[in-house]
Length: 416
Image 1 (cartoon, rainbow, N blue to C red):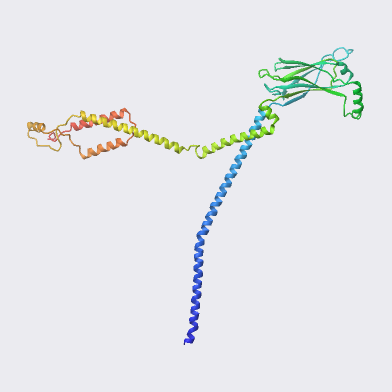
Image 2: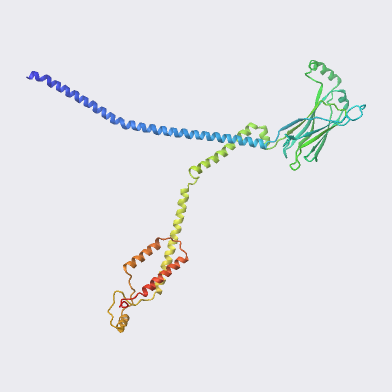
């Protein structure tokens, strides 16, 4: 029996060991699961908060980027508008077409009249070429051939007269000019040297004569210049073409804008951007936080000032009431009789003797009347402090009427 009982006991012990091992493993897994549960929840919460913060930061960055782009675009637009409106026309060039009469004697050599041209200083028949108060250099360029007629002509005059919209001449000037001198030998050498170009038509024997008419012409704001008449005082002159040139000479800010355009553009756009950014920042603070000083602080200060003022007025009213009560006590007449010490009616003589022998006692108020007076006093102490003269007068009248009511209250002998 002992030999057969040995193996089952071993099997039971091994089973118990295995069960205990399984229980320990399960308990370990349960403890690990219980420990990992809060950790997973914490990681989930951290991930959710991080994702929310990242999304909010990305949204704010996108709004900031769009706002900065908008401010930059508005800054560039403002600078371009300022440059276009402030900077006048830098240079103006127009061809000059001369005309003359031809109804004279054909036997005479030369023209019948002086060559004359009418020039308009209006662009698109609306805008003026020259700004008011801006100095301009006005010159004319003549393209003249090196012909024997022009060489024999010598000096000749060019006259220019500026006029207003009504046709009134506001300025007139005359200048003299002539061809540059070239000797016959120099002309021969230049002809031989440039003969290939002259033969192909790529070069011509001509000279460009530039004549400065006005070094610093300024138009008047009250009488603006709208055109000019150019006249050449010579009937023998020969001209290929002519061109009038007007160039502005800038000073101050216009000089910087014209000679340093890139630097001026950067400074102007940066200034506009900073100004608009400050405006946008103040608008954001006013919209979000109610300005640099929150309204809560202002409200607290105002309430503190109101409470101190109310307390001061309450103290003044209390002192005034005490003073009035003291004066009323001094001038209050004595009341004869008592509500508690009443005696039987035995005749008029007995009543008079009892009334004369009893000391003057002020009648006591009942419990209801005392409660009512206490309630009125509490109401007066807790009520509004700001009272005018009419309220005080009403209170004094009410107190006097109450006193008279107590004074004339019938005694117990009157009820019989």
